[in-house]
Length: 247
Image 1 (tube, helix red, strand yellow):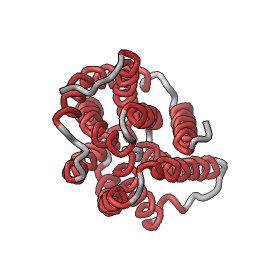
Image 2 (cartoon, rainbow, N blue to C red; image 1 turned 60 degrees about the horizontal axis):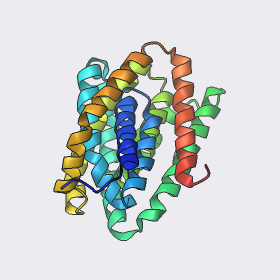
Image 3 (tube, rainbow, N blue to C red; image 1 turned 120 degrees about the vertical axis):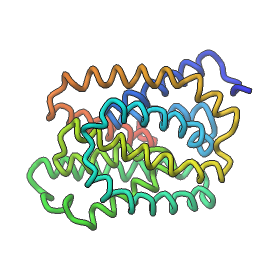
Image 4 (tube, rainbow, N blue to C red; image 1 turned 180 degrees about the horizontal axis):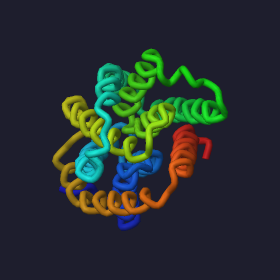
């Protein structure tokens, strides 16, 4: 049985699915639009399970489009702390009310955007290359992706801090999040967040994700690296403020 949604709500769902594809093509901050949309259509905690298969669909399509650009040394570096963060996020989801997740994640993403902006002004050159920074970002990525599927801007900010070129960023993120999101499936299923109804809902939206990937892939080729970085920072900042309830 499909979720009982109105026409306006279905249009919002289509927008959210399109943004997933667009985000997977490199504009990661746009993906938080989907987080907000799904949290409006479903209870916040349940929305994470509804969204997860859509994200995996986007990850698969993104890997097919950008796999040749992946830098596996970055993936191997970030996976261990991210897995630790996923486990921590799983226990948080069992113990904490869903309403507390968004503001905390938004605050951290906003801080990371400020860190990156300060670094672009010539400061903090050594911090992003340290193992402590990598583990901190990886663990927070794991926690935020488990709590709200909101790790895209966190990892984008980390890769930008390493001066990773845009296509390497997209290709690396594609493989990284495909692995991470598949790892999350047993945890979400254990929490009862993935159901037959939600999977049927996902199936309807998969073609829209593909359309978003195509649109994002076409646009990213036209945007210079510096503008691309500024757009990512802008999207991440707006998404963080929205999660915090500031806008």
